[in-house]
Length: 127
Length: 197
Image (cartoon, rainbow over all chains, first blue to last red; front, side, top):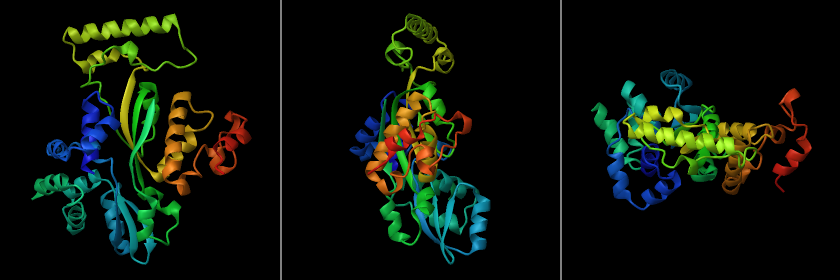
């Protein structure tokens, strides 16, 4: 996930082809860590090239509350009080900035392994 | 021109968690990221019309366009054309002069033509991608974006045939042409071209 963020950052500012950047960065995790370490929440679009999918257990009212707070979540009913929820990292980061509630804390904890540096700056930004 | 699928959300992984949900309902939860390379700015302008998508494009504010005449897309209808080539050369010289005189790249670029090459990352979720393909593989789409959409479709069919064998121009998806009086009139031929055995 962070390789794609780094690819996105370099695509906008270097003349290299994005597929070349992605292949190079896949082999250099330390370079990815360095680049992503410079990300700020305001750099929104580079956080959009990914999607996280969750199984959400919530009532209809709780889901409505989430949808009213952010229009960028995709939600599909999967059963009684069970939903498919998905969004990109930008949505998580921005949601957490505005609504640092229990729901957003759970979302953030779930990205800890997949995007440790992004996890760090989102959490650090608020706490 | 090149389109390369870099990452995607495998349908099978999501199906493991939601085995009873129809594939169509899962489409908005599946992501596809492509590296799109060496297309014209005219083509990328058409891509960004699809707003339910994410883009990271080479920035002309930060990247200097060197040797413009080698970094342009020429439509086949123009081919080798003296007027076209002269204008590209003039734009190239003027751009270089402006940059060398200290004009910021973000302003010097105002002189660059739509033919200028660009590269970008494109991410779309499945439902929007099927819609994009419906419009942009259509015979009525502009040649460059149609060629790009065909490349994208080919790669998607290779990795997710369950979803994308059904994708293609809207006449192929729907069984009728939604273009009304603008129809190309070649629906049978088009459907045959996109049909998967």
